[in-house]
Image (cartoon, rainbow, N blue to C red; front, side):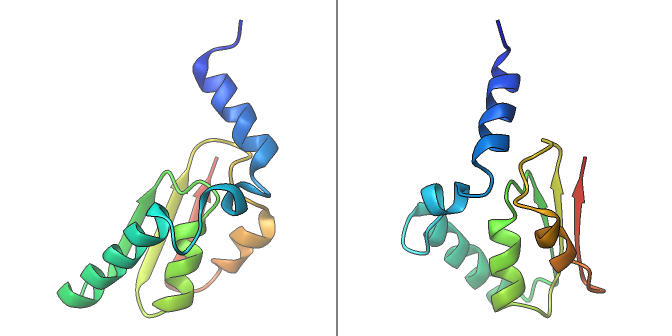
Length: 101
């Protein structure tokens, strides 16, 4: 019998390419949370973000799009979760990085 972690890892590996379409939309709870976070970043003048458990990188990609001036680092330890190496390459800028296992 597979462990819960193995089941979760398999699910994310199988759905990574379409995960955001299924679960992350601008007008759902993820979009609301992101909008609140970006408002706080702006209000408090925050200059950097650490996203632990970045998953597909949805949040970091949105931050990069809307707030390219901040430094953002994403960490994801579950192999196969990130969408693709293209997404990781998108972080290859001085103030952006993605760390995967």
